[in-house]
Image 1 (cartoon, rainbow, N blue to C red):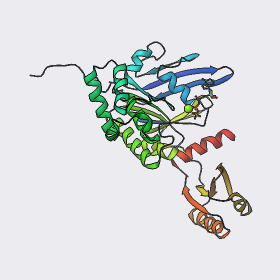
Image 2: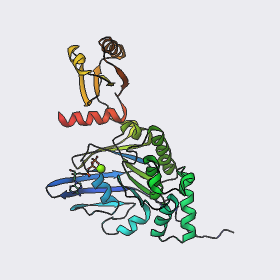
Image 3: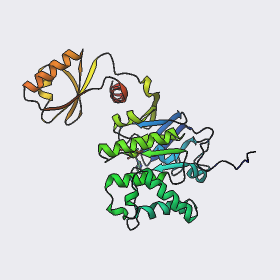
Length: 318
Ligand SMILES: Nc1ncnc2c1ncn2[C@@H]1O[C@H](COP(=O)(O)OP(=O)(O)OP(=O)(O)O)[C@@H](O)[C@H]1O
Ligand SMILES: [Mg+2]
């Protein structure tokens, strides 16, 4: 005979999902969100990708019940964050892009404090804090004051903090900023593990290649609007041409221009070139190096998230 004991607090919800309709929010004359409409599938990792100032943080603040929109509505896990913010806080884990740390506390005490804030009894809060330190591989730092942790370790502690109350939806705002490659891989694995346990994860970042590895869907955000949600496997491509990102230690643009190669600058030391096939790309690389360009990276970006992001930006300029 089995007794029904009720669902444990960490059990997944029936239908976790996010939805918003015509959300608008201004700060003075700035329209941070301008009729933002989006619906996200449950139980997946969704990348929120968009340029600086496009409204990602504003959206995440509204979804987590910390900021009210001027108009429009949102539902997270079926709950309206404006009407029932405390209920939203009970099942949503929010990791801000910047969070203060209580520097005099040890890592363990820091997590225990959040357990207490969620009204956990002291013993349970300590147990959960130890469990999370182990999950993010910081057990050896449990007695270390938070201020002695490295930046990456602080980020991991911040991630652990968002998990204290076993949320079923995670909203992570630029969680990987400032992390070295190894720490990013660890974070990616932690996010995937949450997803595998049925948690819906929305993650914003500018590190596109890393989002590509951890995400199932991508939602493009631009000028306060959602420009589409795509399964990662079905991303729109940037066109028929082969595209390569080139990173160089010195000027690459002058030789490219002289050779009549179509290119676009994406940062001071990076360009994206367009060629007709791999042979032509190899020829361009040989030409650049023979002319003294110190190329340190050349990678195809014709498909996937980075290609789609660049395509979106190009579409906007057209
Ligand atoms: N508290 C605020 N006061 C005034 N303006 C704000 C405030 N919060 C956001 N904004 C403005 O709203 C717009 C959207 O900001 P938001 O932080 O949502 O963008 P973002 O997509 O998160 O950018 P980033 O990628 O740089 O983090 C920006 O123009 C920003 O300057
Ligand atoms: Mg932001």
